[in-house]
Image: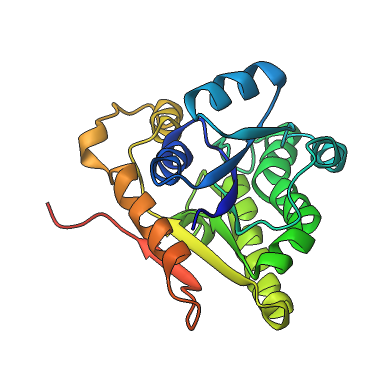
Amino acid sequence: MPHTHVLTGAGSGIGAVVARRLADRDDRLIIVARDAERAAELTEALPGSIAIVADLARPETIAEAVAAAELPDSIDSVIHAAGIVDLGHVADLPLEAWTSQLAVNLVAPAELTRLLLPAIRAARGQVLFVNSGAGLNAHPDWAAYGASKHGLKALADALRGEEAPHGVRVTTVYPGRTATPMQQRVHEQEGREYEPGAFIDPESVATGILTALDLPRDAVISDLTVRPGPR
């Protein structure tokens, strides 16, 4: 039986792979896109999908966007795969680098989850957060991004306990460095040459995500760390 999933970050990296694999098995997709043009591109690439047009950089606008989308009463999962990264020393990071990363990586997922919870509860569904190794350990230059991802872990941990009585499962996936456009941007900021083959294939992370979604209802993968395998 097809399931219904809401996805952020479906246009790139891990989110794009997850979206394609869900579409390939005929699940129903609701894609969060930052504007109407991007929504048209994504729904054309994923036939049968619909879009919520919402800019995650402006969490205060998400409620109106969700209301306008006329979503189903029952949603099996929301997969938070969108994210942005700006590296820098705490001594050098401007305020905008903090506020933008906290908005997109933490506040927007919290707000979107809040708005979708009635439909997720109706399905006894799942909330899945694509976090990062930086959500467990923050290294120099990663303060703002790491803070947003540590916050995302806290959100997931609290939500897991709160929603268990409603039958909602909550999963956090912590990928290591993965061969995505975000990783390429990280390398540009670090001033290093980018070699995609040196990192985890996003297909491997997507397999972990689908495993968590498809796990029988008698169990939950609460936290899944995905690290590079031996070369």
